[in-house]
Each structure stands twice: as C-alpha cells, then as structure tokens.
Length: 348
Length: 272
Ligand SMILES: Nc1ncnc2c1ncn2[C@@H]1O[C@H](COP(=O)(O)OP(=O)(O)OP(=O)(O)O)[C@@H](O)[C@H]1O
Ligand SMILES: [Mg+2]
Image: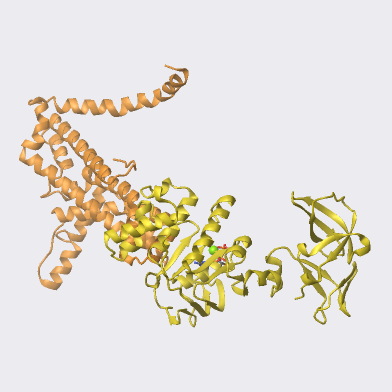
C-alpha cells in the first residue's frame, strides 16, 4: 500500500491558558511538548479541558494573552486554522452532507486548487487506504457510523496534513466497531509516522494508542508519560484513581515492613514516613491464611468468566479489589488471606 | 379491497371530502367562470394576447422575483449574523425586525409614501442637500421597497432557525482543510440553509405575486396583476375576465414554485 513521506511536525504549547468570554476558566496556563511523529493522547474526565487544548493547537480557539503555540519552533499563535494545515477528525464526523464520499475526501485538494486528475488519483488512494472504495459515490446519509468515520479520516489525511488532531473519534460507535477501528487507526498512525493528538476519556483507548498519555484534570496537566509509567507510577492521587483500579491501605512503614491493622506487608523501598500503600488488583493473590500478609473478609465476589473479582474488607477504608482465578467460589463474609507482590506497591 | 385498505380509505374520506369541497370545487368553479364571458374560454388566451394583461403579468412576475431574491439576501445575511453574534440588544433587534409582521399591506404602502412620497422623508432630505426632490413611492421602486419590507420579517425567523441548526463542526472541518471564509459560506453555510431558503423563498414569492394592499395604496403608475383583477371585478364588472386572470395568477405562481423546487433538487414541501 502506498504511503506518503510525511515530515512530522513537532508541536509545543507555552503558557497556554484559556478563559472563555463568559468567565469559564477552561485551562490553566500549561506547557506541553509533542515530539515529531509522536502520538499523544489527552485523557481525562468530562470538562477537564481536553477539547479546548486540542482546539488551541488546531487554531480554532485563541489562547489567553501570553500563551503561544509553536509548530516546529515557529510561532503560529496568530495563524488561523486554514493556514495551519492540520487534519481534524470529530466525534460527530462533521462530513459535508451536500457532497458525496469522494467529493468529501477531495474537498481539501479542491480548495487548494489542485488539478482534477491529481484530486481523483489522491481520492482513489485514500478510498483504498481506508478500504471504502465501493462507497465513493454514496451520499453521507447512506453511510454507517463506522464508514463515516473512515471517510472523515480519509478526508483529513488527503491533504497530507502536518499533524492529525482527533477529538473522541470513536465515542459515537458501538464497542465492537470501536475496537476494530482503534486497531486500524493505531496501525495507520504508525505507518504514516504522522504527529497525532488523540482526545478520549476511554482509558483502554488511551493505553492502546498513545506513545504518551497526558492526563488532564480541571484544566491542568496532571501527568504526562508513556502508558506504563502512568499506570505504574501515577504522579498524583487523581491519576492513581482515574487510571485503572487502585487499592489503598493505611499503616506505617517500619524497618522494611508496612504495618497495617490487617497485617504486615514487606516493603523494603517504602519512602520514609509513608502512611498509605497503593497497589493494583492484579498484584494481590489469594493465599492460605498461613502465608498471608493481610487478612480480610469477602464482602462481594463477581464471577467474570476468566477470573473472579473480589471485594475484601481489611480495615475501615474502602474494601480492597482483588482479581483471582475463577476456580473456586467465595462466600460472603468468608475470611481470606492476601499476599501482595512488593513490586506493585506504590506511595504518593 | 382488503380490510386494511378499506379502513384506510374510510379514514381518508373526511379529508378527501374537505379537500373536494373547499379546494377542488371552488377552483373548478373559478375556472368555469373564467370561461363564461363573451369570448368563452378564449378569455384565458387574453392574458397573452392582450398587451395590457401580459405586461402586467410580466411586471408582477419580475417584481415578485426581485422581491424574493432581495429578501433572501437580506434575511440570509442578517439572519445568520443575528444568530451567530449575540450582542447586547440582540434579542430586542430581532423582535423589532419581526414587528412589521402584523402590518397589513395598506399600512406598508402608507409607510412607503411617508418615506419616499411627495412629502416623504427622503424627498425632504434630498431637497435640503441637492435642491431636488426625490420621489419614487409611486413607481416600481416604491412598490419593491414596500414588498421587501413586508417580506423580510416573514423570512428572517425561518433563516435564523435554520442557521441555529447548522453544525459548527462542519464549518470547522472545512476550515481545517484550508477553506477561506468565503468558501465556507458557499460550500457549507449556503447548502446547509438551502431548505430554509426554498421554504422562505416560496412563501415570499407567492405573497408578492398576490399582494394587493400595498399596491392599492401606492397605485398610480403600477399595474400589478392583483390590481388588474380588482379593477376588472369592481370597475368593469367583468366577472369572467377577473376569474380568468385570478386562475392564471394562481397557476403561474404554482408553476414557478414547482420549477424552482425541482431546479433546487429539493424534496422540501414549500407552501405555495
Ligand atoms: N465556548 C465555551 N464557552 C464557555 N465555556 C466553555 C466553552 N467551551 C468549553 N467550555 C468549558 O470549558 C471547560 C473545558 O471544556 P472542554 O470542552 O475542553 O472539555 P473536555 O475535556 O473536552 O470534556 P468532554 O470530555 O466532555 O468533551 C468546560 O468546563 C466547558 O464547560
Ligand atoms: Mg471534548
């Protein structure tokens, strides 16, 4: 399959804040560097400022005074979107309803006054790339959601943009299609080597697609890093709670052991003064009480097919979440022993 | 006939009777009266053969077409602007724009005279500035002005409602692909507003074709078809000719709207 040699774009935001006309402070001034060819995912709860940040990068929104947007080191803050040459893909597809699929895909080239044969060739190429050749002459209202999003991607990529900005492109699709298209987008972004920013509030999507994930909270960047780092070493309480499931248990670190009301866990690297230990469900195993670090009673057990999810009460805090194999049943109130892998322990 | 379609027929019957009694029968009667004069159904040919009637039909068509186009341009620009830019006083301005909705054509004609008649505001100002009086109330220009004034309030709300439904993301997508403001207007906004333009334009055109009050108030040198019908009916007492002209006025209006709708390739059912 044909691909284009793209020169990926490095994007930087410097002190970009955003206060809307009605006084809403959507974004605290933030700095962000996106390397050429990198895929960065903006992840965060609704209203945290993901779309706003993306729109500032695109040029659809001006940052507050003092904020600057740099493309390959060049200040483009004053440039309107039509001069920035960035591709955009929206959750609502935003296709032109008065044009066919082929006309949609060729629109950017037509605006640039490309020659007819050149447009036709490029449209064919994009139709092939997104595997939607048979749809070329369809009207937009004759397409399914997944097909529409493919057309939107083809339209954005047809003009060879310097970067691709996607705002929740899969949110409107059903789960199965979402998975399939996510794989496809992932493969596409890697093959094209294009710089991409991808907004989502779906963690699984973020983990799968991002070279780095930028977790946002209330208009601030809470943490930026590779998916593994975000998951394994959350920088803040918010990130720890937002990404995956996190258990917490209070106690004191004393001589290489973390002592809690429910038992002691060996933890050599515990930072001095730690009063709370954090760990993921997959770092806990259910063991005989003799080998257990902690003891607690089962308050709920959910059979998930391949595994069982247990909620175990060990102290006055929220019950711990434990994932165990599904070989046996657990009764409500049953006492179980838990063993924690010390490599999974975290402090904040 | 199956039971299902029999029931459907029974349900449709009242509507059918109503349609027959209040639409088809009067129309047929009108058509028949049109042919009841001395010349019989040749009266219908008079609209083309009689120079007076023909020129009046043509000027009515031209006036209605010009009014429709001008009104759509004004309502299109100001409707989209007022929908997009919320400034202090926006709501007041919109409600003021729709204020003349209640005015009958006679009042509009009266206002045109006050503005551009012999004692009109424009005349007085021109007199003061250049020493010459400008009077156009009693010409085609005066009538045109009155019709546009009459039509804008009737179309602007339709346009504003349609502009509100436009998806701003589509415009943003066009811009991201490099489209200038003008291209966005022509490629996204106008196509998006097309159904509203057709609906509003149809009402505007039909109203202008049949408008009477304004023409009646201003009538000195203008000869629009509704005025001719009125004259035939009351002054000449030529019932047959009046009926024939009325039928033709209706038929021509309907035909123009049908052609415009087909040309626009729209399925919008525009009210005639
Ligand atoms: N045009 C606007 N005027 C005023 N406030 C706005 C505007 N657009 C966004 N906001 C506010 O700015 C904040 C951030 O919005 P933004 O759309 O960036 O959130 P988001 O992270 O994309 O959320 P979601 O996941 O729901 O899309 C929100 O509080 C929102 O209400
Ligand atoms: Mg958003």
